[in-house]
Image (tube, rainbow, N blue to C red):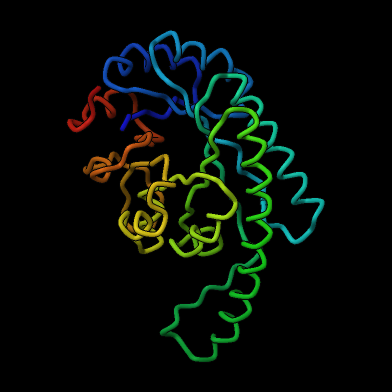
Length: 252
């Protein structure tokens, strides 16, 4: 198992991160659509680090009912696959997207909300079925490029896949999986719930901490689950290299 760090949003800070973190970490995760991806990946490789990437996800949805929108989403992510492969990345993380739905009343409020939940369930299953096809297409493209594609679990009710059961529906797509520990907590699940369903197909972790409600990306207090053999990213979005160095369970 290899721990990694998230490269800073400000690319000018990457040399500072590499100098501080390369002795203790084994890889860096870079933003796939970055114009400087190849240059930054080369700097990571020169520092002795492997590289993973995270694909774009804003405005994209792999389960869109409109086939043109779905095709455009696949095309954009295919570009990220090519860029990641050209940069020498070993794995790229991808999101499936958001459902066009906003009403999620608490089940305890009223039985009158049952119709809303039934309508959402039908929409969700249609979204998942279409997204599975899109992910299968992207998985094949990634495999041809020599890259592993890892589908990430998402935290919010209007996102998918969110639960272990929804993630397991993507097993026939041939992809690997990224288990985001913080996202799982917001959705009401622990790592074991996903590991028991997906097992060895979980190739990548995103480790961070939150309050169970908001995606805060605080430093984790626990290491990767025992027995995990893939790449484990410490995914912090604030602070600096010192926050990665403070984690006493990380070391080459």
